[in-house]
Length: 309
Image (cartoon, rainbow, N blue to C red; front, top):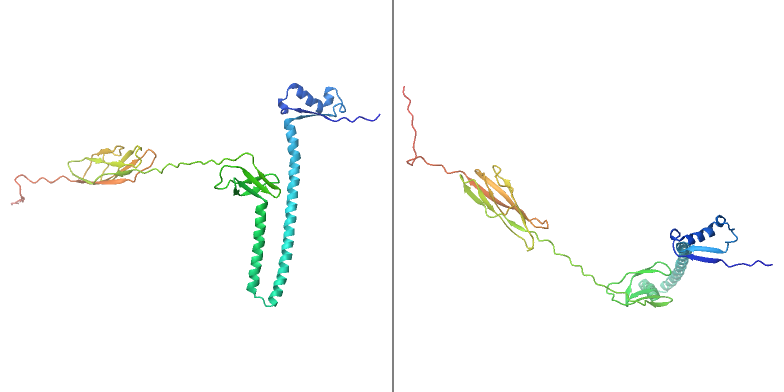
């Protein structure tokens, strides 16, 4: 009696193995380890169970081999075409050189021969370029785009400047294909906030006082082109015969006291809420010594002393 050959039975389980219900796990176990369940290998020989993830993995492995084979084939074809092109170019130029040598011997000028060679070579390049453009192109609603072929079925294109919403068309030697759906061009407006305007500080006019007056009011002003900015201030002593009281200070006006005769310099600066600082402005305060009081009665006098023996 001839042996009956059965076709394998396939069970496709819905998800990864660690998430299968108990029955699905049992089916997987039977196909992998039949002896554990009291069965022989022949009894489960025609049963195949696959998870979705396992099927995807097997498919990727198979396609990976196919892609590798196609890449090798592409390299071989490109190499063969390049080699053939080199041979043809070599034959062409060798023939042209012989022809030009003969024409030169017959009296043709060298300039005319070189010009003819340039024209013929340029024409060949232009024709080849036009043929290449006609064979493969990517158009975004009629606007040509630069692209790069990844493999026989995949290419990457850059949306060209000036493209409008519409279909994408790809032209190859096999024909032209147009997308059923349109791509959409969206315009994004980026608003750049204006640069921060720095405040301007003014420490006021130079001042002069005379002792016994030993204090002075420093009155600063500050402006900012950004009307909504909040300003803070700083007064500080720069130079002087001693350290005055009341400074440094963070108010617009400040009283500097405990001054003695000499020249003082104070600095005033404003800062806005964004951290922008003005240039420091300076004011000079001159403190003059007290005036000398003349003797009672007025006029000069001479003190004379006598020594007697």
